[in-house]
Length: 127
Ligand SMILES: [Zn+2]
Image (cartoon, rainbow, N blue to C red; front, side):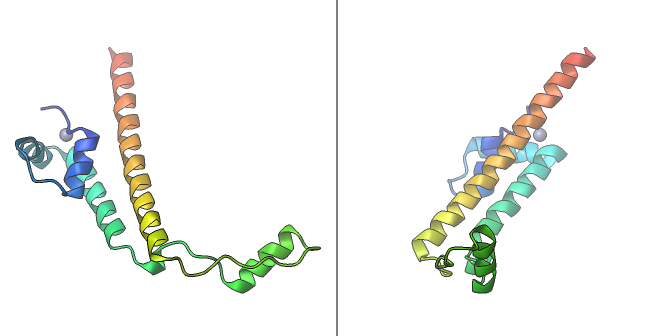
């Protein structure tokens, strides 16, 4: 069997859908393939990190003294603008968590695709 498709590895890491025969076959391959096993392990860690992200892990506005210094550095002759709100509402936090997960998974898939393409190019050069 060829390596498990990146999108399928993402689905396995998310573990949202009811397992299918294709999932069973993919997991059988993962058991025997170090590369796919490593990628699934990384993706699973990313999914778990995103799912367990807490408010403290999400981006917030800088402390007020830092904000004032930044503002003075950018435009010293004008008044310091109000800092952005420090506490994000629940919806914004959820959107940021989803965006962080999507970005992370997208980056992982892109890296895998790049790795796959460079391997194909190397094989063609060798032949
Ligand atoms: Zn594999």
